[in-house]
Length: 186
Image (cartoon, rainbow, N blue to C red; front, top):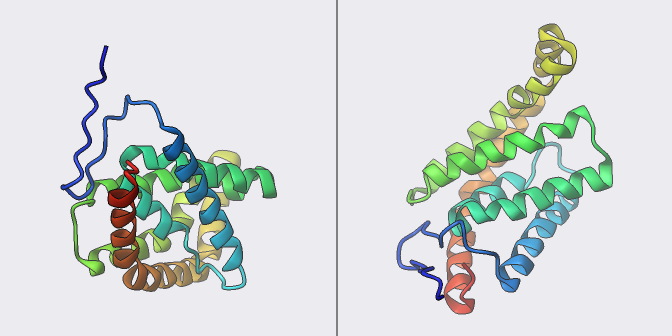
């Protein structure tokens, strides 16, 4: 029986059906993208809360659809494997999904300012999103005190995300689209 999988490549943000199994090439690609996200974050670790992860999450969301979550959760796994599981990174299980879903909703958007605003807002809200873990583990007072103490870092995070996305999102999006056309990566 033949598969009825059809890939639409002429429409931005379109992806193959989610029920299709990953190809070997996709598995390798998502592995590379997840590992590259982790490596880029480590390379930029000297800059406080200036990170490429938000950019990469948005890129895989718009370029590969829901299958891009393989790359995102490989990155999360690498964080856990290298640093261990703690309150500070357990939130990665849902915060990156929230950004991914927002990027999927906006996938047809072309404006670099909109992408920069999404990434910047996510950076500003990052501490608040992560505070949910602290609320569950220690109550409201713990969560609010942790979040408020981190507001200066969230300001840096938001500004850094805004600039990184403004400069790099569109060129990298075009590069991934070109890669998909040339190599048939879905």
